[in-house]
Figure 1 (cartoon, rainbow, N blue to C red):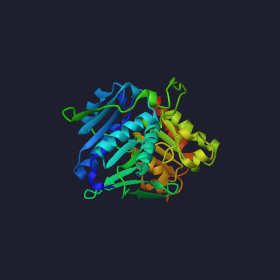
Figure 2 (tube, rainbow, N blue to C red; figure 1 turned 90 degrees about the vertical axis):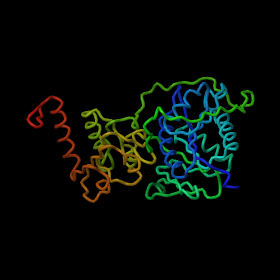
Figure 3 (cartoon, rainbow, N blue to C red; figure 1 turned 180 degrees about the vertical axis):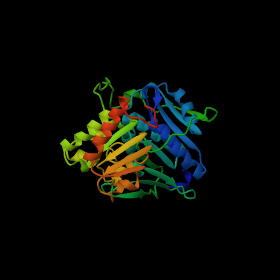
Figure 4 (tube, rainbow, N blue to C red; figure 1 turned 45 degrees about the horizontal axis):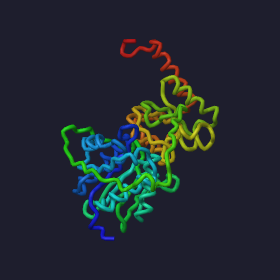
Length: 343
């Protein structure tokens, strides 16, 4: 493989219900930084049906050009059809770096493309950097159960690919004055050649926990001691209108469902306020919440690692401190607490 033939940073622009999904906009921000450091263009790859109008939005969020496959055959996501479009575009324009959101679609598509192109793929990346001279992508992620951070390199194959979790990177502020190039590509996929057909899409009406959208999260860990003890987290969250989160230890102990788990093997969150109660601060958990606006930790172990990563720390027994917080917030709601002489 002649590595010199490959140039540029690409982002797969996943779209759903007529809009680019947020993680793709976040990746345009990360991709912009990589492209600028490398001195190469940033491109987006957009696939779907009647999606061309979305290309301009990608340019506003940092792309220099957008390749568009707009055809009814791409109306619904299917691995086979989308993979053919991605491979067609990669073989034609040869990107050196290609980023995907670590969504169900992004992970499925990235793994299929990497297999067909015989290149490397780093999954669930939490940090990205690039060597400005060689163009070598430095994709970092927790490894060995979240105990260390590993930086993975793909030295001999291109494109270098990585999936990145939602909320890990930050989208740029859209610049409506930015201009770029939109390249329309022809679909090299025929419906009758595809082995899968989408007969019906059934929306899951079940209420789900959206930790990644929460403004305030109260998370509990093994320091709560038991499932009964973990109920303190539910009480506090209900009092302040927060969403309940949990560490991996709490989930594995059966105290709460996996959908509440924050961390590398759970959900990455960026709330305005994050309460970490009875959570030691293992790296596996930290990578999922370290970008929160305000982190408040409560732990009876003064040496707990969480205190090195919080804005405010309270050393003490959660079963003594949290009830006092609940009482204080309840009084505040009812106007019984005065601040600076005012109710």
